[in-house]
Length: 320
Image 1 (cartoon, rainbow, N blue to C red):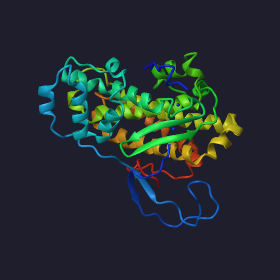
Image 2: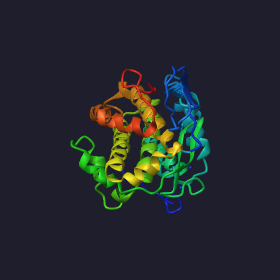
Image 3: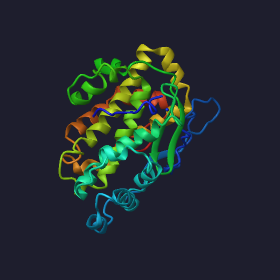
Image 4: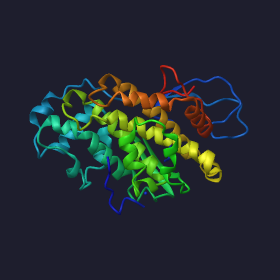
């Protein structure tokens, strides 16, 4: 999907602590998660999670829905089913671009349009010039309890440079837009992270409303999340192999390392939550891309960059 960002958004922050999730006790180890030299105990095991109630009753909101109460309905339905969505909607309630993304003709169409609407409003929040300075530092709306602010980027290199590492056609439609397009392909790490976060926020937006989705408007939500994680992992590999100076710069940024870790675990969490709805919220290619994301070389670059081990078993939303 090609996203239109106004000029005010393009030039755009993470005070990121692993604080909105489940923390489990960890055993002793010698490495520090931020690359320090002193600690003798590994950081606690961290599992990404966030509140959601996809079975909460929305029948009254469906019955009363109309084209004039859509924002009130949006906030109310997410308050019941996905509080992070409610918080984002409140934060962005005055954004004039909502109307471009929301289907007001029926409740089913409204629910289906949330993948695009929440995706785009995530862009609007993340890339607002009060938070993000393009290619210098970025922001990311993670969930109601976590927002990333002032994450250093140090520029980077065009994301099209990851194309030689993609050996299949599983993400071809997105590759054509984000990597092969002359403008989109020229975006650096800023573009990779911004698209990854927006796509990842769009996935829970429709996962918690899946019973109302009847058409194709959200049919690639899982593919988008899996593909954008692919791009991030491959970008790190190219950084290390082809741009060692840049690799050293970003690897020495704790905020960026923590953001990458959170996004990896968060993707695993929501891909698992949405897995029962493959076919409605994504194709089987999403699972194939995910399998490729867990190839040894990709896990190795993630763990080297973040300084953390991750689980590759049934608990993929956790560090090891």
